[in-house]
Image: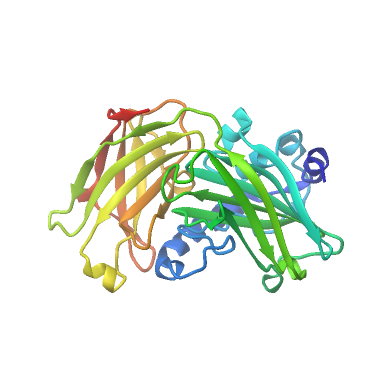
Length: 341
């Protein structure tokens, strides 16, 4: 299927945004409450590491999005509807690379449509077309995952979503915030793997090279720290990175070592305010962890054309019931004046 035909095929998609926003917020909370289970899962797309958010899955209803979707590459409109933090910049600056590579057998075609990578985030859109009807019944979905340079991805934040365009076509999109910025370099080899997909037997594989998109990268090393009076918890802002697809804040969370042993280490929920008073939280702020515990935390905000002079980080403790309580002692002002290009 070429790009023009595919764009035409999604003109009739109607995405229930309000309902999906509610689902996404619930999924964020659920993922936080299940952080222990998340550390023992396979590093696959259907069970993504870090903060897992199922962005799609509510079922599309045909009615009309022609104005929003026609004549625009796929990732732009889809990710705008599902609140990807970089959707506006992706559309405005035409950042995606059109891939259109596929693998077909057993009556099913797996095709990679578009991808974009900036050294810190990776976004890939895949769709599946079948000779006969296919569905998203859990027992039929199968197993798939993505590798970079032949290695499974172990991201700080990862999510995937799937939904039907029509009875024979399913769209799937993936996004990752990598554990460390630029850990794979400027040029990467991507492979999308699939096995026994949507009731079809066999293995699918699509390989393609992907180059880091051009754009300014700014790195700051604020090295500021806050800690509780009893010195049980401490929060350090190690690095802030501004790149084309995100604003990334790397934090170190200090806590007693015995919390590692009994798996009671903290997961803080954050709100962030910039020097202009703009608040980042909810769908404008993703949270995840790099590594096997909560000591290296990664916060991801939308990309910014105008760099702020500072951020204020306001952490909240999340209890077992999902209730949030501010931790004023750990509120941290992060100045952005120690810049490295």
